[in-house]
Image 1 (cartoon, rainbow, N blue to C red):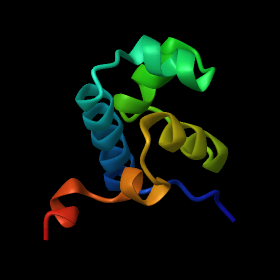
Image 2: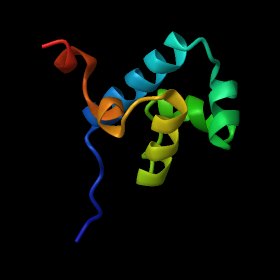
Image 3: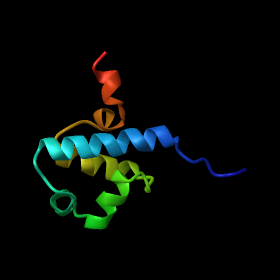
Image 4: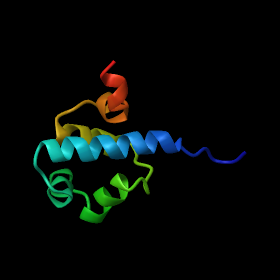
Length: 81
């Protein structure tokens, strides 16, 4: 059995949402990384859709950005409906 890979669209939604929430709060990738105790290049790689993040990382990112995990994984276009 081959391991499953997440949908590209889900990674894209996550990347877009992290970038949007981060910018709306006026913080850089480096500042978000410091808040989350992650490496600054890791945040960039998430925003470039290069990473599959763990549930615990999603939890840390959501808390740092002041949003829910659901908000991080929901298309902003969907939330406008």
